[in-house]
Length: 296
Image 1 (spheres, one colour):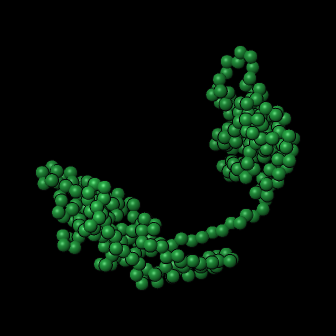
Image 2: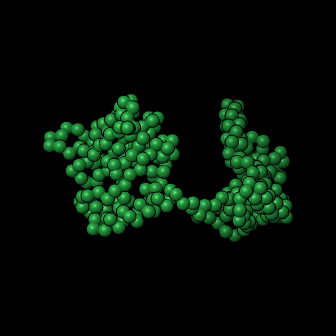
Image 3: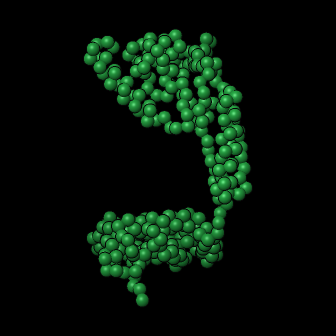
């Protein structure tokens, strides 16, 4: 025989000095104490706008209990299913079950108080039908495979091409009166061939892993779709062919530094954020030393 305990979350008494914060803290403390006593389970009630209690989210309280216990089982008493979307109920309690390493004992009911339904604009008269329908949806969500799928996304290097460039418009200006940027950029044969190779390789890997009904696609978006492209202010030694020097400093304007991906002509599939951080740290160190020397 196993013993657990149940609380209605009752906090409505005449001249009750206990506030809501203390009330929820006490409920949590009770569950933690039940763990030390070796009790099997903690059942925490759900009530809304009711004289029997003000704890509307037992799942949140039980999540806090789960983080501080290892053995006691966690259960609502009960989830008033007609007041909630059943798929959301299935997700919430499944998540708590994962967090607690499988310690959830789920329970659902209709409740009995019409007044708890009214603020939700839910029909108490239809609660039996709503409960039956909701319970079936929760059960199916937990027991039947869904229409799940898995995919692979691929990234590769867009090679630097002299023809891909950014220039200043000769006739269009922005709202500050400055020339607008004109971006002239395209994928070439190497990128197109690489995309086909990545697509075919991904399909081969997924089929080798045992997946079925593997399809492929290549919609060939325009450059910039993933916002991972580099360039527009490349780094180099020659001011005639580059914008920045080796310290991310403009060749022509010594007090301007550009430390993002603009300095790189290209990047491979790796995320370059750490590289930007390193370039920024180096540029800052260089700028500070140049300031001390009064060179900028």
